[in-house]
Length: 135
Length: 365
Image (cartoon, rainbow over all chains, first blue to last red; front, side, top):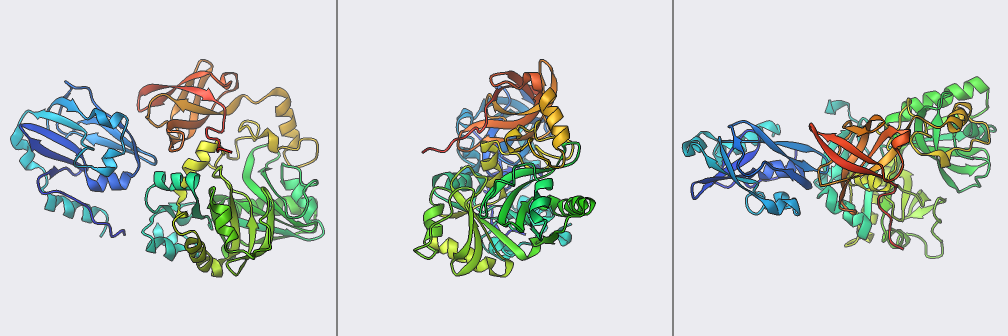
C-alpha cells in the first residue's frame, strides 16, 4: 500500500520479528529495524532487560511502546545482556530517529557468534518486508 | 475487509499526502501524515486540519422538531437560541448512553445533531423510535453521506479561517455557529472542537470538500499541518474528553462518566428518571483520570487495582504535551477521589498511578 522506502544496512542481519543485529568487537548490538520503527511510529517507552540477564534465542525480553501500539522485543541470539542503551529512558524517540545508531537497544555477549549467519541478510529481509506488506 | 470500507470525500487528498490509513468506524481514515506526536504538537503550537467527515449529521425539521430534541437530548434545549451549539447525551430509559453528540439549533423548527460515525444507524433508529412513540411531527433526515466535516484546531485557526472569509464578517464565538462562506464555499462554521484549543468545525457539501481543504492548506501554509485520528485521540485524551465505544456505551450512564453538567435533570427527557435516581444514590463506579508513574502506557482493557476492587482502563496514551503517561478508566466510586493511589496491571506487572482531576492539559491564556 504505502510506497515508503526503508533503510536496511548491509552490515546488519535481520529477524522475521523486525530486529537487527550487528557484531561489533565481539558483542552483538541489536535494535529494531527502520520498518519496525516506522510501523510503530512515535516511540514513547522502551522496556529493557537487566544487565546480566541471560537470553535464549527467540525469547521475549522487553517491549517498545509507541503512542498507538506495543511491539514485543525478541532475542535474535542467545547470550548475556552486557549493556543496555540508557539514553532511551529519557529519549525513546531515538528509536525512530536513528534505529541503527543512537536508538540501539541492547548489547549481547553471544554464546555463539556464528549464529548471526543464520539470520536474514538485508536483501532477504527487504523481500520479507515486501511480501508481508503485500507490495 | 477493505472493500467494505467507506471513504470520505478527501480520501484522495490523504493518499496524495502519504497518510497512513486505517479502518475506523467503517471508514478508511487517516491515522497520521507525518507522526502522531508532531501533528499533536502542531495543533497545540499553531494549527492542524482534520478530516472528520466520517461523523454523522442528522437533521430534525418540523413543527415538533424542538420538542423531539428536548425528549432525546440530555442537556437543556429550551434555553438554546438559534446559532448555538450544545454538547449532551442521547440516553436510553435506563440512563445508558446511545451516543454523545453536539446539537445545533438553526431555528425553532430546525436543529441538527452531529453524531459519532459508529452510531449513525443506531442513533437514527433510536430517534425514529422515540418520535413514533410520542407521535411528534418531525422529519429525521440523515445528511451524513452528503456532508463533509473539517476541523481546524489550534491557536492559529482563527487567523487562517478569517483570511478566507469576507473581511466584514465576525467569526462565531465559542459554542456558536454561523452559515456563510469560507473560501467561497457555503458552509456552517462552528466554533467548536475536541482538541482543547481554539478552533472550528466546518460543515461543507461533500462535493466542495476537496476544494475547501486545498484552500485552507494554502491559506495556512507554514502554520497548518494535516492531522489524523491519532493526534485527535491524544489531544482529546489530554483533555479527558470521553470517546464513544471507550468511555461511553449503552451500559454506561453519564453520571458514571462524570458528565453530570450535561444533564438538565430538572426537565423531562428520555432517561431522566433513572438518572435522577442514580444522582440521588450516587453511581457505584466513576470515570477518573490517572497519571501514571514512568513512561509505560496503561492501555484500554488493562485492570486498575484499588483497595475497593478492580476497575478497567478505557483509554490510555503518552500525552505528548504533558509528557506523562495518562489514562482514563472506571474505578469503584469510593476510590475515585483525586489523589487516590491505584495500580494498573501492565503486561503482568503493576505500575503505580494516581487519580487526578481532568483535564490533564490546560491551554495557556
